Length: 185
Image 1 (cartoon, rainbow, N blue to C red):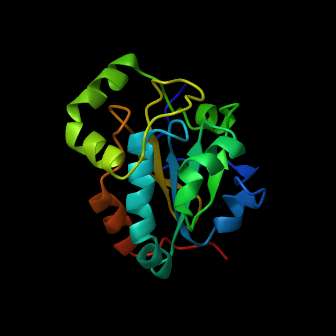
Image 2 (cartoon, rainbow, N blue to C red):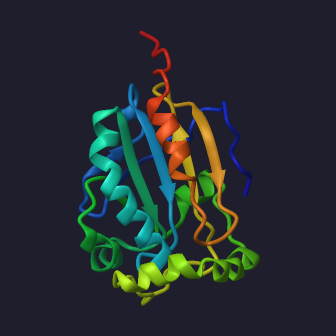
């Protein structure tokens, strides 16, 4: 898989969320977008990240950011696990991992082992009831986050270093606060 780079156009995404509602990056043109790729639906670190994003979501939407999350699990598995959080943003099932391939989202056994260096995050996830259950797709999937401007251009391509590594919230906040890109008429 080839990693994407900042400045190029974001690959298209025409799909449905876990409820069957359409999700289209083209339909989000004119808004800033954060596209996040996760592991499997019961991943404790992934669920903790979604929990954190849910808390920030109202402010982000008010400031023009749309969020789309992608999991390598089926809609049924997402509904059973991460879907219980009732996220206010679309969660896309991608068990065939087509979108992962298009965005160059990787796997890494070293990245899997490095997750042990996050005991605080793991303990917080476990204390919130986010426990691993069903493993869908590669266990060693490493998350990735993409910030896309109003014109559909990649502003930030963040490929995690381990299975719990996502784009720092401060970078997302800075992206939300930046001046809008000029949208062609």
